[in-house]
Structures are given as C-alpha cells and as structure tokens.
Length: 52
Image 1 (cartoon, rainbow, N blue to C red):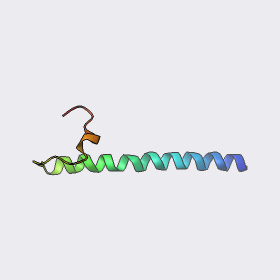
Image 2: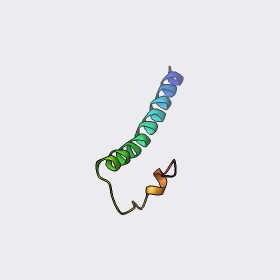
Image 3: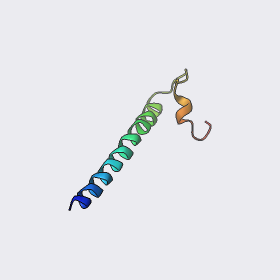
C-alpha cells in the first residue's frame, strides 16, 4: 500500500508540474491576441517558437 500511494503521489506531482508550466504560455498567447504591441516584450524570445 505504501508503494501504491508513493506512485500515486509521484503521478500527481508530475501532472501538477505539467499543468503549472502550461499556464504562463497560455496567458502569454492570450495577451498577445488581445492587444498588439509596438514594443517588443523583453521575454518574447522565449516564446518565439516559429520565428515570427
């Protein structure tokens, strides 16, 4: 039972890390669509996947 609860807690921790890492990317995309900006975001190179 201890091993089973350890595996479950490991899965929950991994899933929470994945979900929390997806939030900043989705928020950045929503802000980009809301208002076009003339100046460049200082961290835009981190999200520049396709070389826009």
